Image 1: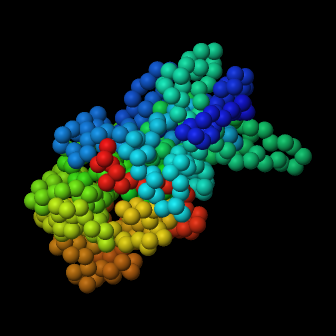
Image 2: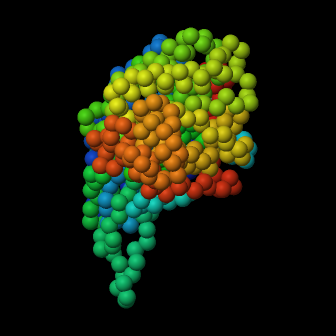
Image 3: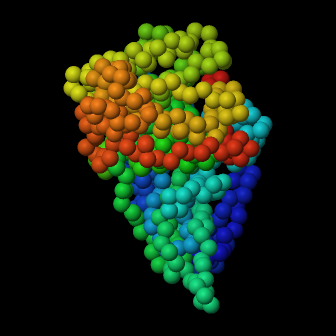
Length: 489
């Protein structure tokens, strides 16, 4: 592919330019429109020149997030534009791929709190979000490339609309071309690869064309057995991992062989109106994980009101996906004191009470189990700030914990009585099959495997490789979010 990649400035740092940005780059030999390659998005907003903006929330959900029903509507409006969990997936025989892209600036609420990061995690002015990619299922460690902020959309795509010129973007090196004997390998004659490009977790972006130096760039069907839907806050959004592929929802989905829709929003609490059905074009959920509640620590809240919010949120989830296993992660109360007037210390118990009511509705219908788990405690070296946001190593610990707990969803007595292992025949996670079909080899809950999944979630979990946590020294630079700073907006 043409090598005319100049550098432009983004918030004081270099970013990758584009073929044609310097005016005289060679045309790539194959290309496709990004709109054909997007996974993990709920909607694609149509833009000029066949560009698109991926959205992980529907228009109705975005209105709810920015409404008076939300705790921090201004913050949620900014965070909803971020493309956490959204990917480009394609197959190509190219060794180098170029993606036309324009990234948004960081949300103001994000920029205002970067100074609160631990010095050993990263400096506020450093890169802390961007693009990363997998090739043939293997993640390219440490590869995070920032796309450009072009200033205006018209400036970004103006060149693309005239004379075959290309807008700014990023270049990904998929691998070296290997020579065969005395013959020099040429682009297009090498091995084909399946590529997954993870879009930024902490900003939005607009996408044009994807080009390579091979003979084809083509979309691939979603071979996942279903969708992992995550409803969470800044931790699940991937706030301090530094790499969008290393947030725990991304890791869990990849290890389970599920597609991912990550509807997590920084500073979010339980908000029933923000929960919406997935469109028909997205694979049906095979598992739903709710990871909310920590942000009640930062605001004055009444216990009865919060109890109603939690109950209404989980009832809405159960109403939309009654035949899908549900995992609810309770927040850690931790050592940091909540603000005066907060009922945060009661939130874990309120979540358990709401979960019990959902179980009570599911048990007579022999529906899949509901599992309530406490978020694992992380060592201080695995968190990025005083608010407890995990580093990439911390996210790996959370992912490993979840993958280890998911086989409990097969416990028949959990679905029928609400208590895991009550019958004494479940093996308590040992993986041993017991009498009566209980245990690791059984069905997913009393209701059987979800229709969208040819294999149960727990079968995937048992066969998944345990994610290895990076060393703390190798943790990518991340960022943090402090509710105190956000309230100063």
